[in-house]
Amino acid sequence: MKRTVGLAALCLTWAVQASAATLKCPPDSVKVGNVCIDLYEASVWQIAPSKAALVKKVQSGKVTLADLTSGGATQLSPSSSCAPGFPANFPTDGNWTPISGSSPPSPGVYAVSISGVHPGACITWFQANQACLLSGKRLLTNREWQGAAAGTPDPGTDNGTSDCNISAAGDAVNTGSRSNCKSSWGVFDMVGNVDEWVADWADLASNCTDWTTSVGIPGGDRSCFGGPGGAGGNSLPGALIRGGSFFAGGAFDGVFAVAALNNPSFSFGAFGFRCAR
Image 1 (cartoon, rainbow, N blue to C red):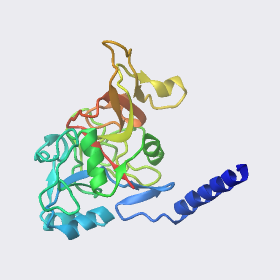
Image 2 (image 1 turned 120 degrees about the vertical axis):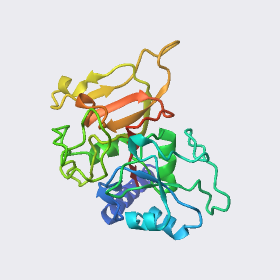
Image 3 (image 1 turned 180 degrees about the vertical axis):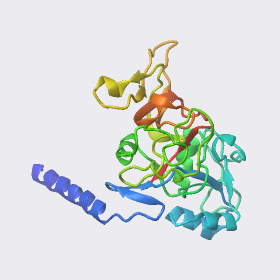
Image 4 (image 1 turned 90 degrees about the vertical axis):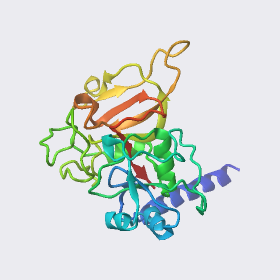
């Protein structure tokens, strides 16, 4: 029995390693370990179910901005303007209803990784999770996000042109437009621009700590985890956000900044997301 279990484990390990070695990522993403991480923060688009070829391009990771605009797609909630917002069949709790005639069923809302557009914002964790899934992807785990962010300036300076967008005012900038805001893997805007929802939840935080300084990591990045709990306390889920945004500024931006300050149904003009496959 032990021999059988050992052989099974060996075969599984070999299969995982073989899969990682042969993984080929589509043009909208880059290989980080054995995962394809989107190069850009997600923009959100409404596409009619009759545009089956366009949807297929989105789901294959090969769609371009020209494809979307010429195909009649509408960008939803571009950054802090929050307008146009999400359709009624794609509510904040993520419990979408399909558009009549859509096959397979879909609310007609998709997440796209392309450069040169404002990232989607004003989106809840629930909506971000569903937008990734509808595009054949998923939200990154916290571990995957941390790995893909390696080498991004943390948070560095903001010269207003090429550095990460960590200004304490203004708005998000177009995806990929800050050439210096790139990780060692080639992933753009992991620090600043918009906060990025990741898949993991934790206990809702009631305060924040400069955790990096306390453990000898430079940067002064904040972590916001946990609260008193119990009756009258923070016995609520907090969906994790990573990287910081144009709005947060300072210690709330950075490769190691992490916060469980908001429940999964929260939305804000500086909250966006990124997908993986």
